[in-house]
Length: 509
Picture 1: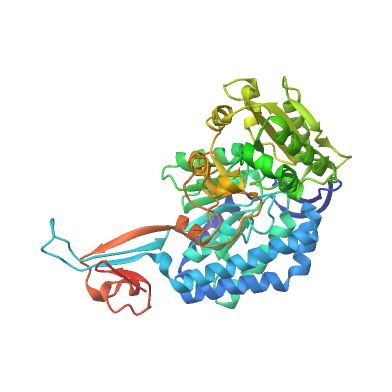
Picture 2 (picture 1 turned 60 degrees about the vertical axis):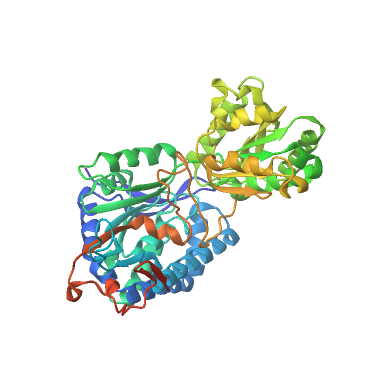
């Protein structure tokens, strides 16, 4: 059977724009993986690797105008948003280049023999090595930052791992352009083009995770798709790590004191966060616990006013639009669920933002309202009205794992008076990032960042944003009693590479 064509589609009209490629066959996936596997040696030199990452950023910046135009045509996210996202992507590539240069990610530890220890310690030298070829699955909602040149690819290349990327069907033309830019950067440093492979098609994605030369995978997408790939990765004859970001409600708890103090500001801030990017952020606040009473009513009025002023927008594709409209309708039909601002179809190709309200008592125990505890991708949030702390805690206790959890406290609570610290402790098991008096949308690329969380937010304990994302693609190995002449340069006593390390118990920088 001939492979199906891959079309670039305009999300504003739903019409096909141009044929970009064809879906990869099993043979083509195999060829891409083998080419990546053959390119491993070209990434062995950290100096070359860092230079490659910086050249990749340079190449993307040089093609900025054309890349942003292509991204907007396929995603409708707008030039301003996409220009910023491309800048973030280039910054991330350069940040990983700096990490490669520094070398601390290798975690070098050297122990000389100690016969006085019990039991005796032999000569031991430990560091981390690349896993091998990494499969990367692009996300729909970040065509730059979580796609072909995004965080998974940047961190894998920084670790010394070639990649084969499964392009997202929402931006196939852009994926080809970005892959070409990365390969131009590779050529500048004598690195084979196969170091960055690109394949299209659903079946190609399945073949990729099953390929025996693929050693790990990174995924950002839906719970259903991610879980299917996660299960396939675990079912292989040789299972591999699967670092998947699947779905998140990103709960927000607003204390009564905080609502009393600044209800209007919190309502307006929530509206801005839940509608940002037409609600297509993985950290969109999807469930908000707000108090009943006058303060909570003020908050809802502010939210109503702010959301009502937001224009309808275009989702990434018509399948997502259809799912959003159906998901909103199904939730709104549940008993005792109200819709102060009705979300749904805004036009033939757009959606309008809105929010639902429900009493916390409806979610305190298992039942038909459990649907409200599932993510609805798009500009919708659910406001859960609670009578007291016990009702709020009952709902929190039923939530699945999340990328983020947020609490809004009053000034006194934030200063340590009241239950502020206790609430933080209650939220910590729910998420990988806990925010106080802020909004979760906006994930800074910083060394201390953690973008992950308990399942189903992610399938591992790692982060996909920030410097420690590199750790996903490395494994430790220790050499015992190896003669000095045979040791890798990273593990020699004289430290010819000048690496940070722990040497006989002392941290050396």
